[in-house]
Length: 309
Image 1 (cartoon, one colour):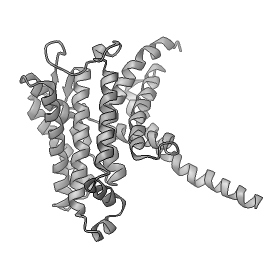
Image 2 (image 1 turned 90 degrees about the vertical axis):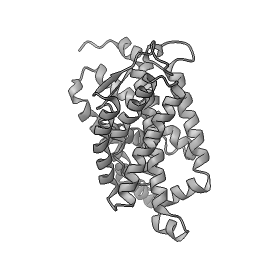
Image 3 (image 1 turned 30 degrees about the horizontal axis):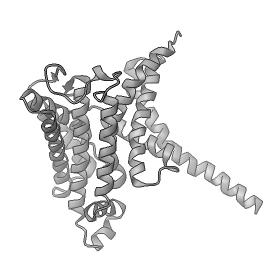
Image 4 (image 1 turned 120 degrees about the vertical axis):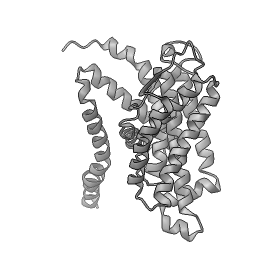
């Protein structure tokens, strides 16, 4: 096998840019998976909705800040739909997410009018583009993605320190205790799902700009990437990053590391058709590490301590 190491090096700027953009999506997944303790599969649909809304608003002549806001609001609505299915209709969260995801496929086609919508960064007003990924300027998507990640983490750190944010965290930690404290857990769940999918849609809007198009299938498997980023960040940085804001940062770093592994796999010459299998194995491995650690290594450590005693 003839491997050119420079090909991998040249791909690193794109890895960092995409990792940061998907890191925003992973932070949204973290809110439902880790804070709310809810399995939300809506993101596979929302990951297209945000990009579709952004591109159509941009093509209609709106400036990029308004188009980004529109994408974020569309994500909020998607999360609201899942929340209503779950809380008002009594549908389990995972099934509610599947129903919304299924519905969003048709909604996304309606929004775009076709399965794929390209956008030209020269013709339209966009915030970032893959063309600038190696440019030493503020238009570099790595720089812009990093700014978005930092601002989002700062806002979420503030929000989850408020009374409303604390009630959301309490709902995920112990619903019964939260109800006993007078918290409306249904409202907290809906709010968490809305916030999560709003961030996913925002990430989608940035991704659509970066790659130059929105596609109805661009969110397929997004939940797996989000979970991979969350688990990788947790496994690698849980002992170091104990602050809530740093935990969110670990998720974003996890997304970058996931894309680095993804790129290395491609560089090694594996068949692109096998990437979903590789992704599943990566996630399974990082999910299993904490279990193996607690089951085997912790017991070995305890036995060692008892022997010395």
